[in-house]
Length: 249
Length: 309
Image 1: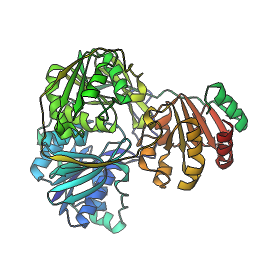
Image 2: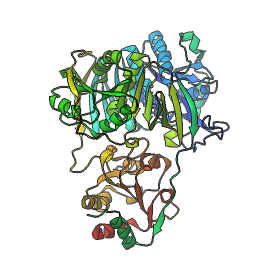
Image 3: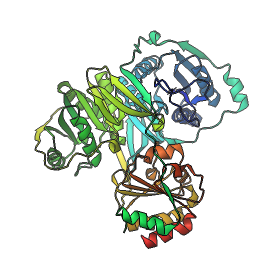
Image 4: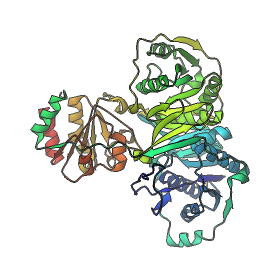
């Protein structure tokens, strides 16, 4: 079966986001951009399923600017077989993304779509569930383990308080949580090889999807700053402070 | 505006996260609730008693027993024909269901709102809480998830909602519940605890976590938490993790012990009323947010604290 793996180019997770002084967003000029970490986990899981003989072909997809090609090349270097860039300079919301992925799923007929549970820029946590709604497929979100069993997949999910396992009919949607796997680094030979793997460039219009935003960002501001309190000299002073607040056994 | 609030419950009681969602919904308009599940008469009665609630829609069906979104979302979409906003606690269950409903309604969801600024305007955290966006929806209906720590909890009693059975929906036949491993603890849940004691990588082992962190939590009747580093190192299970990728908490008192204070951890606990940090590195970023900081070796200081408090 084919696996479709959407990947997003985002501000690298090690870079501290800076809010622009005009309040229009976060400054992305001249900062390091990388693949969304949850998507990287998705690519890794697809590769593992191919290595197990469950998957036959992995297609990485990204919706974003021309530079999102680099993100797709990373996916190809990790082990994806081919890539589709749906090129646009507009910010595309999860609902429109899900519509684009639905159109690609209709054309490619994957058995599984593996997405990151959320992108670390907008923190929406929506696209996978929305794609599941639009395709009418089952969804296994926040996955920490997956196991394909014939025409079903069992997904262990990280839920509040512990783990939950569901069994889904294929084709299905999986979204990844942090502990599903540890993504591999692409080797230099594989990075070189990735340069010649096929990468198609499309536009949202090719899929008849209107990407006009439904939600307007009025402004973006710094979070309220929490100021440091006091350093206490020893445990006795800490106990006194806590007792004064009514905190004791 | 007529809102429909998703009631999160465990089959017998309404979970606290629901009460914060009710408060958020009440800022938009009339509050209706949806209790879906199997054998949920008791939950429905309790839900009707939440202060300020109008109608409680009850969908009692075996297919709704395990919150499978494939079965629940079509039910909600049908009920949304007569409601203007679907309001859901931003728990793992809520986050699983809400976007599926939004897409069925062709609505762009607004996730993890922190405040209601107007009938269609909200604030929400982006970039792990490093920025706050004010956003305005242009959709005809709203689908919102609610950051539980950002809203007061509605009173769980004093209301007199009417209960109405819903017959819609059933099993979509594409998913089934296999099982769950939910850690049963004799302590408060992390997300609703008044006091949380969290340990970090400086503990060095799972044994030390048990030896140092647990007795303090026991003494204070606190919930147990951990940094991502401690979870990744295997000291404690995943569901202990406090942080942007774990649980978002805001207790009265948060003890950060041997936790350096990575951005990702701060994003999960910086709304706590009082933060106490114990760390031997005086330059640890955690001290920049701590109300009371103690620079000390945790292996000496924490047992001493446990003895004296």
